[in-house]
Image (cartoon, rainbow, N blue to C red):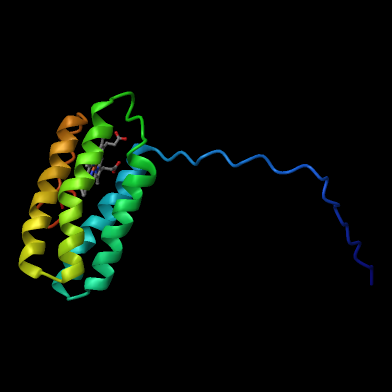
Length: 140
Ligand code: HEC
């Protein structure tokens, strides 16, 4: 039997350069937003409020970490639209998820869907339509 050679690579002593911020494409970020958004209705209908609150929080993180600073193909109105979306509809969703207020949730969810579609118009992708249940209207 041949013996295995173990190669030990000594650390070279130079600190690693700071990692460049990860860049995710707008479409990829929005696929995450859409995936989380469509399941919210089912979660709340099933009384899974903790999971719904988690998904709403993850939506906020996606906006705060990426979409607020995204260049949107050099469209400066989009960063403002993203900020307004967080402060308005998304904050309402968070509040109703926290208090498990089913009626309030319905109102907040409707307003959020309207805001999703309004931003798609601003971003010149009006054909990306979100239906009342939170799904992408893709013909299914
Ligand atoms: C700040 C503006 C803005 C907001 C708010 C917004 N979107 Fe979008 N969305 C866009 C833009 C712009 C695109 C097109 C992405 C691209 O061109 O890279 C898009 C694309 C999408 C897509 C298609 C992704 C793909 O490539 O398949 C989905 C799904 C989507 N959005 C869901 C939502 C949902 C659901 C909401 C609300 C919870 C929402 N969006 C809120 C700007 C926004």
